[in-house]
Image (cartoon, rainbow, N blue to C red; front, side):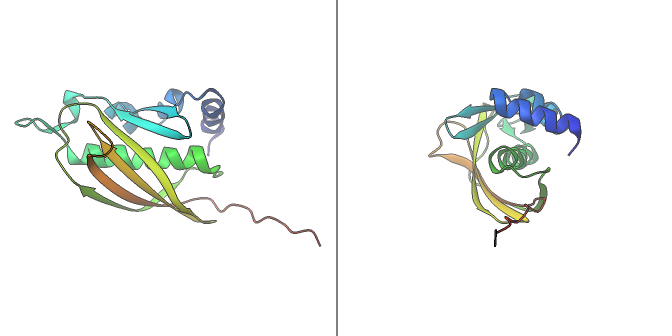
Length: 154
């Protein structure tokens, strides 16, 4: 993790403003990802943009944009909530498209299902109208920098 990234991460955690952190990720800037804190969770938003449309006839969001948005959301969520000492690296990403992503704002929330010393598993849900009607769900597995073992005092 670069000093610049670490500084922006610390500032984001202190202020609850993740825009400067997202600015360091070119793809996040390209598709327009936003992030706000809502209580004990992060809410990710992908604003409606003509640049993100894959099917202009419907119009519907490009599946790759939805996948990238969800993967990016999971990585940032993991970085913010687990205290891992470095950037998580994706190992596996499995996505289920449940319905077409219409031309409107899209939201995502994440939940860390399991975190070990070297691997973390995150569940991601994306929706547009209501969280009870997701447009996609995903599971992501990340390699994280190994967390130091707690030393027991003898």
